Length: 250
Ligand code: NDP
View 1 (spheres, rainbow, N blue to C red):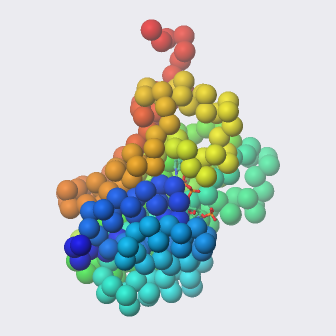
View 2: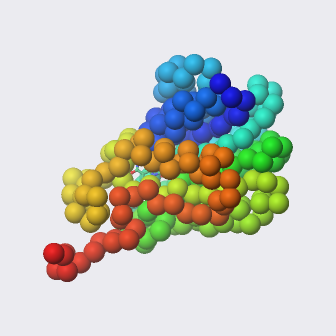
């Protein structure tokens, strides 16, 4: 086990848990943070030595307490993965302010709050932030008025962080996943959406949690020591082709 410490938000399941598992496998000490206490305990039990913190990333006081617990326990933080996210697909007309805020408070406020709270720890040895965006933040689409906008904002927030934090020795990058079968995706991807994704993506399939985690772990690692402000789509090629034009296919 090496001394480095990685904190992953939304780590009770899905892409966050896969990322925590990979970072743990690299010998790092991991902090799993999530608002789902039961699922978090179950997840943390699979990773010996992991610290589990129940916290809602959209609540400033909970975020400060969580980071204070990391400092008391480990005295350092090297990697922050801002992965916690919620999805809500709906047309603009039906997206009332409550729905809009529910998406923004986790997907955007949460990234801002967690990063800010971790700054002092991350700057001690030169840390890395990896934010999780989405292909929905790279391309506009119907029904993503709140979700897509929140993820586009995360992409830009990453660049703001990179611009400002470089002199503190902190790198900031963003991974934009394509579709992955997780609780989040299962809730919003209808059979029609699934079929359309398969059809539109050059690799013709959903990704796995592990495939997204590999991209995150690379950007978080020392192997990416000269990479900051970048946006990496781990999306089976969706960003290059988008909807494509079926009539132009061979
Ligand atoms: P999951 O729903 O499987 O896992 C997300 C975890 O984050 C859940 O345990 C969730 O708890 C938790 N969480 C949500 N909001 C908060 C909060 N405010 N504070 C703390 N924890 C919270 O999702 P994925 O693994 O699929 O998603 C991970 C990230 O990847 C998200 O940012 C998502 O937007 C992004 N992404 C996912 C894609 C996909 O197809 N799966 C595609 C593109 C991007 P709870 O269950 O209570 O909400």
